[in-house]
Amino acid sequence: MTVAMVAFWALVVFAVLALFRTQRSGESTPDRRDPMQILDERFARGEIDEDEYHARSSVLRASVH
Image (cartoon, rainbow, N blue to C red; front, side, top):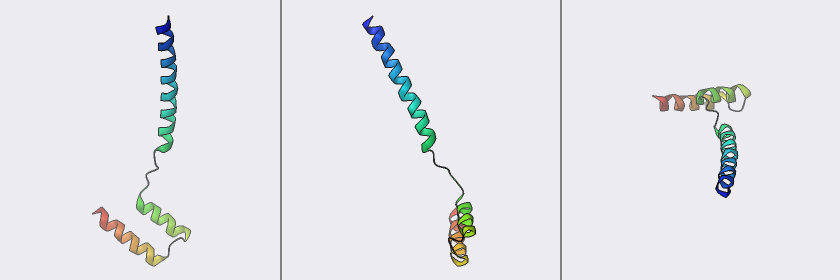
């Protein structure tokens, strides 16, 4: 009877940990966006000027090939 009770509580603890692990792993996965898309958005918001946009986009295009 004691072994069954320990096994039951071990199963409960395992289930709770597994539940938290799956929720946390879903939150920690970063949103992988295309670097050019991010650069385009920054340029559209006015965070960077045209010269900086062209310089950074040429670096990104060179690193892809």
